[in-house]
Every structure is written in structure tokens, then in C-alpha cells.
Length: 479
Image 1 (cartoon, rainbow, N blue to C red):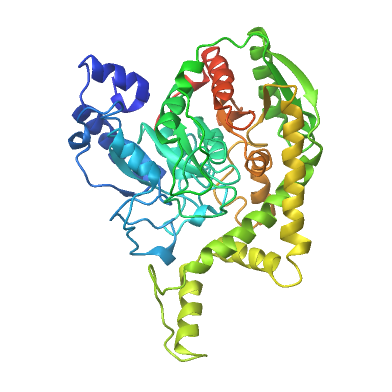
Image 2: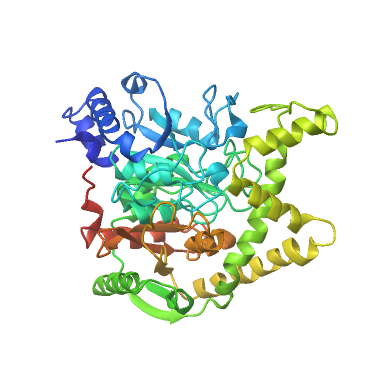
């Protein structure tokens, strides 16, 4: 039995009955990394620590976790997979890291990502792309592709990622695992290096729904260090897993099943709906009429906020500093320009320019302000549906994982990868992606379930019921 292939809750059971030790878990994970990492390239860096030394009695003690490279770990390089943060070592831990340490979860390493979370494929990384464990020629999704690939390849038991427009759920779908974007404000953003502050959320990537519920319980909760953190009690999400789903009403938005979706994926999602019907769930078609504006709205708001957030990376206080050989303007201006030119990759530059334009004089009202108004309409669509329904069910992605390099020269095609996930971020609602089948090419397909704000319990309840009625979560990668 390979311990690294088990779920966290299975390992906890073995640890409790002394059938496994933290040292044995550490050994099997290290062996998996040694075997697979050269092919998958899930990690930016491993954290050099004896995992067993951290196992002294916490509830989840001895279960190593991987963390996306945009979550600050004290005195440890944290770079967002960008050259501009070379050498940066945060002087503090992110709140979620403090919470992990409080439960004595050892940190296994920091995972690869699209630079500053700008992407849907984990190709926009300064160290190169991560590969999908199910097909090494394909992307793992993004921007939390390293976290998803590490879990799918059994190089990690579970992982943390961040989700701004689908960056946890889309990689989870592509890699055949579970990914959760919590309600905005459910998890503290303190210590998460910001992409778009009104959209970002940290969440779990795991092998099954139970592990996702366990991990979200650990990282959730009010934090005075984050002004957007919600002061709302955190329930025991695992207690909702085994409730039946009879008489639950789920909405199917017709806008998510129009042209553009892969027919094979549509068929798999419809089969998932039939499975839930047999469990007593009722389904009804609804309309989310402003869905067609979600991608455009997102890329106005997200790039504007990214432009503002990334203005701080200028070579003055931390990270890369570069000076041109010949004076062009003034030494200070030259240093700013040279540092940002060499430090940011192409996609980061593209988004900074888009966002700066949207916020520029004379265009703020036409773009950013209007985008926020449309965002409100999108949120109102969901609020109206949740007055009558318990959840909304959709595909996670319109396609399965695409080939590395296939969309690299087509930004618009890449942006459309998140067409089904973006709305949840704009509306601030929780959403989960879980495995629901495979394509003819043996690539995973994800099912997305969204619920009203702070109703993660209903989200987990429906997801668990479907998971237990199928075997998709038990399929394992062989590398």
C-alpha cells in the first residue's frame, strides 16, 4: 500500500490506529516526488524540513500539504512564479499558513502557478510549465496548476490554491480532483499576494470531497488582519456530508449549455444529472441572463485591480532590481522601467496594460465602473435563482485539458477557458469542482456545483452525495 495515494482522512485513520506513521507518509511522498516530479514539474521548490518533526498531536498532524507559490511563508522564498520577486522572503506567515501550523500540518513544498495567477494553464511561469499527470503533453489548468498536478500525481496528499476566476476549480477539473472556491470572505486573504482583491479566495485542492471539507474547516474563519474577512461562524463542514439529498432543488442554467461546450462534456454532465435524480434531487432549467457578459466584465475588473496591485513591484523595497547600462531618463525612472521590463512575463505585462487603460483618465467610468455595475447584475441573477433553488449545477470547463502551447498565442481563447467559473467569483458565491467522468482521450471532466453565499454545507452535501454514488474520484494516475 502506497500511503501517498490515500486521502488525508484515510491516513488520519491509519495514524490513529498506529497502522502508519508520519515518517512512512513522508517517505512515500518523497518517493513519489523523486519518481514523478521531473515529468510533472508541479513544484517551484520543496520545503526542506523533516515532516515528522511537525507531528506532535494536532488533529491533522502528520498529513503534509503543498501550498501555491503566492501564499506567504515566513522566511521562505515566495515568488508567484515571477522573476520580479526573486529573493523575496516574507517576514510573516499568511493567516492560512498560521492555521495549518496550528493543526501541525507539515508543509511539503510550494507549487508552480501562472505568474501572479495570470492564466488558465500554468504555462505563464518563470520556471516553465507544469504538465498534466493524466497526459504529460497537456496543461494541468491554471493558475493553481501546480497544486492540482501535485495532488493528482500523488506528490502531495492535498494542497492550497487561490481562485480569482476559476484558478482552483478549472485545474481540479483538468486533473481529476476536487477543488473548492469558498465564499468571498470565508477565508482570510492576509498573506495572499494579491491579483484582484475583490475576487481572490484561497481554497483546497484534494482527492475527494471529505478532504476538501476537512481542509476548508481548518483555513476558514474571521481574521482581523483582512478587512474583507466575514465575521461569520464556521460550521463543521464534514457533518453535512452524510445527509441525504432527497427533495433538494437544483437549477440548470441554460446559458451554460449553448454552443461552445464540447458535446462529450455535455453528455457526461447530463449523465451526472441523471445520477443525482436517482438520489432524489429535482432539476429545473433557469436563466442567468447576464452570463454572456461575465468574461468581459471579469477581464475589466480583474486587470484593473491587478494593475493597481502590481504597481508596488518596482525594485525599490523587495525582489528584483535592475539598472540599464546606459542612462535613458533619470536613474530612478530607468530602474523602475528596467526592473518591470525584465521582471514581468508577457501575460503579466498584457494584464497590467489592459488594467491601466481601464483605470486611466476618461476611461474609468466607461470600463471599470460599468464593469462593476454589470457585476451587480450577475450577482442579482444568482440571488434570484437561490430564492427558489438550493444549488446551481454546471460543467466546470467547456473542454478537457488542452495541449501545452495550443493556446499560448491566442489570449482570447485562453481567457474563455474560465467561462463557466468566472461568474462565481463575480457573485462572491462558493463553488466546487469534482470528477464526473473521462473523455474518449482519457482526460478528466469536472462537475461544478454553486450555492448561495456561506452555504458551503449545501455545496458539500450535494457534491458528496454524487461522489459516493460514483467511482470517478477513485481513479488514479499511473506515471
